[in-house]
Length: 472
Image (tube, rainbow, N blue to C red):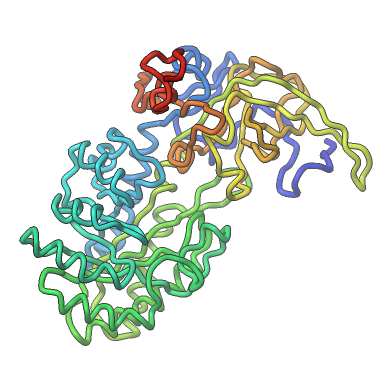
């Protein structure tokens, strides 16, 4: 089987381009006897016909199972040590009212990072005590709304926020629980833009600054210091970065105990998921066991009691549960010269692109894709799946082998798009953001309406009330 020299080293030409790498697709996704792919018992071609394309799909049972898996795994491991755990779903990965309710129903809290996310979660009926607020530049309005609503915990990112939150809490006659976000100096092995705890970046305070800032927090009568917070990055596969961060955090935790109680340690999230078949991502039970071992080992070495633990998975819950389906359009074969001789790459254009998934353009992210409306016996060819935007960097899947007879009108499914695709989507080239549909037990339900031309034109103050009307 001849490899295309244009393919990256990790991508192997498959013997069967119809085969699904189970690790990257939702649990309830399968290819049926007729060759078409179904999700939770519904053919993707039927969903495309009903809701249009591009279309985001969420396997509800899969998302719930992953949320429950993190909660149960961490609760069980730390219960052995006599410690409580709290799992926050990081809403920035994907958020809508139904998804937030699913997370709470599975025993998770919700982590928000803006006024809009807070407004959505409150409107969904989530108990404010189960909400945590993040952010490196929280406005006074955001903080006041959070305090007034009774948000359970606010993560303090900088010195400016300390007295401001204390003032707002005093104005609302309440004691506001807070954590202090700390940069551990650990650089996660991930994309530069996804690493969030090395020193040269915008989040949190250094370990050396933390004791003085904690003392200021403790001096504020309307603040309750719960503990430290850390987040070392995203899409992390290894445990080494977490191990070093836990070691440094526990040492700081022990130092802070000398001057008062420290109830909790929030270790953040950033757990990676498989986007392609060669990715090996850590399981929730493995992470829980390793975190328990590392925290208990550090506490024993320092001679201190174990703190309660919080974590914040987002991508690891939403990402694998989601897929995007597109309709293929133009097909172009490009002939190129390589050191191994001539080679061809097929450019397969689809009806979406960087407006519904900017991650390949932002982070050079890889994805997996499959022909979804049928199976094919054609020999696989190397494809680059691209969008319809006016950018050469508008790539949906950089490299993938698809059947050689793939053509315009075919349906293409892209795996693991549940996190940071809808959240980062835009209206570039005035494309409307696609709908999001949840599927469970053979039932499909729209949970976010797709945008129409009327939605796009309705925001333009230079147009009259008619979507096709002239300027005023």
